[in-house]
Amino acid sequence: MKKRKVEVFSAGCQVCKPTIELVKKTACPSCEVIVYDLNKGCDSDICKEKAHKYNITRVPSVVVDGKLLDCCKDLAITEDKLKEAGVGRA
Image (cartoon, rainbow, N blue to C red; front, side, top):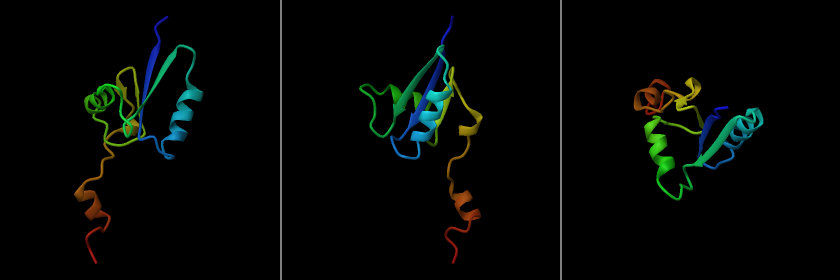
């Protein structure tokens, strides 16, 4: 039986912990869960390389079998989004 690979990218912070716990609780015996703490880093640069490969722009993010979940995509903070929210205006 092929294992499903679930990679969780976090900053090791309190905001990320519930997502890590949820993934671990939801995972089945055929799931391989790997948690990468991008703040702490890895023994090698694998966690940073993977985050770059998957285009991770925020944490926590979850990748299943090499695919970044849709809920984790395209939520990067941009100058335009800040301005739309009124940042930079009196």
